Image (cartoon, one colour):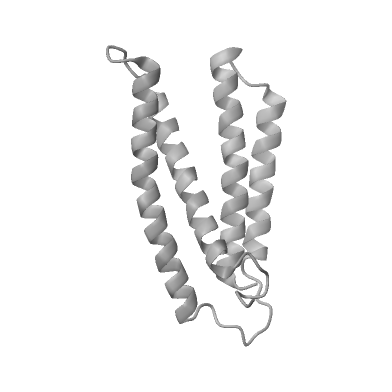
Length: 146
């Protein structure tokens, strides 16, 4: 598994964990008031631990002769960025339509909801980027070889 695949797996894992965390926080905000403090501490420690683990895991090479990236990796990254760019617009339009349908024509969106929407779009784009990279490599751990 090369550096690009490791980064994509890490981004995929972190995006999914943060989407679950954000979903629970939003659910708790709109139903019972605030999330339990033990839940927030657990998820914060989990994300922090994974980030520390990634500092080591993403830097380790399989062999000293392994290059950081080649032409194929650059092409895969370029295609993944294109897919992510398209997904930004789709997710922004979807969040706008969802917000308009929830609050209605005469309603107003509270200020604290806008950063949450933007963070959700950011997580969605990270998810699309990771899936695009892993799909192009064929989801295998064999450096894209079939």
